Image (cartoon, rainbow, N blue to C red; front, top):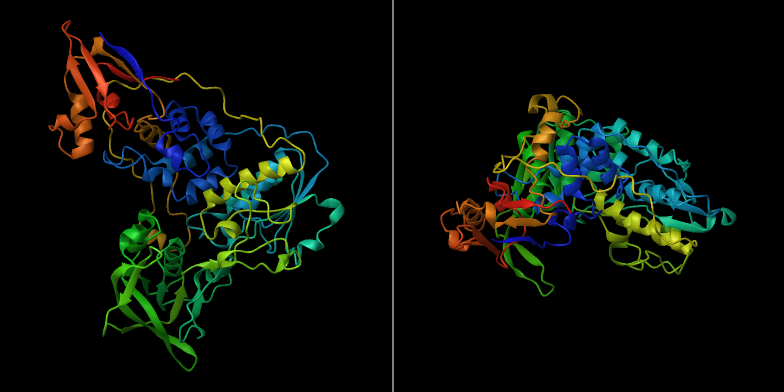
Amino acid sequence: MQKFTKKILEKPPCVQACPAQIDIPRYIRLIRDGDYDAALSVIREKIPLPSVCGRVCYQPCEDVCKTDKFGGPVAINALKRFAAEHGSFQEGPSAKPTGKRVAIIGSGPGGLTAAYYLAKLGHGVTVYEVRSKAGGMLYYGIPRYVLPEDVLVKEIDAILNLGIELKLNAPVQSTTDLPEDKTDAIVLATGFPIGKKLTISGSDLAGVYTAVDFLRDVGVGKADSLKNKRVVVLGGGRVAIDIGRTVRRLGASDVHIVYRRTRPEMSAGADEVKAAEEEGIIIHFLQTFVKIVGDDGQVKGVECVDLKLVKMDEDGEIRFDAIESSAKVMAADAVFFAIGQTSVLDFIASVPDVKTGKQDTIVVDPETFQTGSSNIFALGDVVSGPASVIEAMAMARKTAFSIDKYLGGDGKIDEKPAPPKEAMSNLIPGLPVFPRCEIPALNVEKRLQGFDEVYSTFSEALAREEANRCLMCDLPIEANGANCTVCLVCQMVCAFKFTGNSFNVSEAAIKLKRTAQGTCDAEFTDKCDDCGLCVRYCSYEALTRACN
């Protein structure tokens, strides 16, 4: 008779993929068991903007979820949003005031996150924002149908309630302008707010925009009318999709997105691309702009060419060449570039020790996030180049701890808002992995009537059903040969995962051997990735998850 516990990886794939290292399986289990307050507390251990993140995260965790071949990955981000909206969170006390003050330039997700943790560590914080609203690209760049203003404002207010001072309409011309007697450290969190255009003929015509600048105008209600206009967008990322879907809501009659690569290479999420196509947006792959044509100073169209993959260049980049005689003009009343962004770094010109790097980024120590000037730190897109909200928050948390050390602290937050590890309710033995629950959404007709939020939060029933799909691959597998009937279901589901053929059990990562006593010995080969499908489908509790 064999009984043993199989060791697993220190962190499951979803946690490894999460830039903020949120304990994803744990908050999903807590949702499954109905403890939404604790689930939210687990998330809040790593990020202070859970409702925002539950709407805008690019979900790298779901890309590595092991239920993918069994009805789709667990809807991890939708469950995060559910916890944020159904759980309650009581902010714990901040550390004793240190008397130190930190100035943060920029109130985007990185700046706000750094402000939150620095305030929790007892430091005085002042945030300088050049515009009239806090949030940076969260407010001025992400469309309201993705992130409603009231959701954003609520979470920003909760951060500011820690005693953080926010100065709006407060451009910082130079870091040397900050009051020296009130500034022990400076954080540069200004992002990459300026859109880029290709330097091609016609890019200066009226009706040619950068997507990020136009989205900013939409956010404050000052965008040009596009009713019944024909629109062409160049790009394949989230900004390209955002501007395409936005102009459809502003009345554009035809929207075309031109992308120089293929569909799998789009950095926009597959769900976003699907939604855009549902809304009537046409995407052209392996094409690019050659020039923009106009008449009397106004854009009239875009000349595009088809592309073909040629080879990898010496830097390892895929190179595309234009196909001869493929040029064609696409009619357009408005053209948008969504090909990248850049920063404005004039405010550090007077501090020569702060060095700049490629693409107008700021050079920092990768461990401390200090610039060449010891009291000046930088984080977010202005360091990494255009990245994601969750990546900015993760970097900001690390930067805050580094600043705390610089100011004489230990760089640690002892507060653990989540309760100690809880007892885990058992799954029903043999419960199959059902298909992923559909996230409630507006139909296309209602979407295009305005900027109402497209996706809704899971109901309680749907959230708990979806949470039940998690394979809990953060927990060890316990094998008990005394309970095994050698039904082979564990091997069949494992073989299906690896080969698509349930009957090819020789390819399964679990091996079974009947003993003379009529029980079974189980062995996991090196091929096993701890997914636990074998556990999930075992009806006799010969394989279970151990609550560690």
